[in-house]
Image 1 (cartoon, helix red, strand yellow):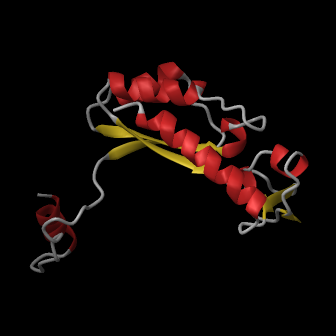
Image 2: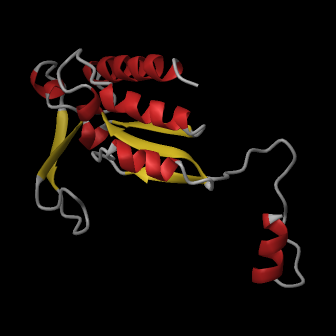
Length: 159
C-alpha cells in the first residue's frame, strides 16, 4: 500500500521497485530516546499508548548502565521493558560505548584513550574535553563484552 502511494504522489506514472519477498524492510514509528536521557515513566506510557507507535528506541550510555565497575544499574531499563510490555510494543536497545564509556574504565582498568576538545558546534559536549578508549585495547574489549553480555542477559528475560 505504501509503495503504491509513494509511486502515485512522488513519481506519477513510474513504478518504483518493491521490496523483495523475504526481505525485512523498516516499518513502524518508534519513540526515540537520545543518549543520556531518561524519559519519565508517565511520558513513556503516554507515548507507547498511541496506536501508531510500534515501540521505543533507547540509547543507553555505558556510563549510565554500569556507573561503577561490575555494578549494573538496570532499574531504568526494566522500567522501559515493563512499559513496552504493558502496551504490547517492542524495545530497541542501543548500548553506547565510545565517548559514553564510564570513567572507571580509565581509572580502575587503566584503559588507554584518545582525548580531544569537541569543536562540533551542535554537540552536547561542545567546547569540553572528551575521551574515548582505544577500540582494540584488551582492557576496553574485555569490559565492553562483559557489559554487552549482561545487558543481553537482562534484555533476554523480557518478551
